Amino acid sequence: MDGRAGSTVGAEGRPNLSDPLHGFYGENSIVGAGAPIAVGAALAARYDGSGRVAIAVFGDGALNQGSVHEAMNMASAFDLPVVFVCENNGYSELTRIESMVKDPILNHRAEGYGFRGVRVDGNDPAAVRSAAAEALARARTGGGPTLIEALTQRIVGHYVGDAEQYRRDGELDRARHAEPLARLRRQFVEAGMGEAAIAELERPVRDEVELAIEKATAAPFADQSTVLDHLYG
Image (cartoon, rainbow, N blue to C red):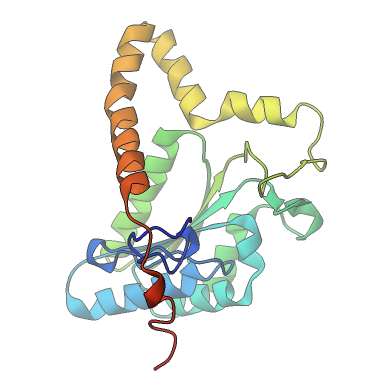
């Protein structure tokens, strides 16, 4: 975000990261824009014989975007190998989802397009893994798309400096207690695992993150002479 010469040569920030060689076709700031991109990738997979399945992840507010509905309709009509994952954190930015839709059970949307929709506890890694595995298997065997509604909470503001005055009393405390890492740690402790063993599990992940931070902050700043590159054809 500070103009260092990384994957986007300093010309863009994190909303435009992509890595097609690893199957990541890009993130962007347009709400719900990943859905039609995923459907395009799924359509390509239909013809390239790769057996790939495309996955689009978005929030609850994105389900009210027209492009997402068009993507779901096309995916269903052609039984495309795509999984739509809606992370329902209860808020579309600062507005509670139930004040914006008639039916707050969002996976019901899939029924209107003729494909499967499921709701899972998004804070339970095992439940998410099971639902994802089933959806991927269905997509790979010609069963078409799936909409997974994963219920979760957002434990930070929507933006830097968000006062979060829209929160209900005690909501954040409950969210911090229920979030996946806190839940998993409690399960380890209940299973008899000590703090030292838990720390040993965390160590390689922390090391990987720290190494990535070091590499990013050591990267040079982008060459200012390239600021107009790729802007005009």
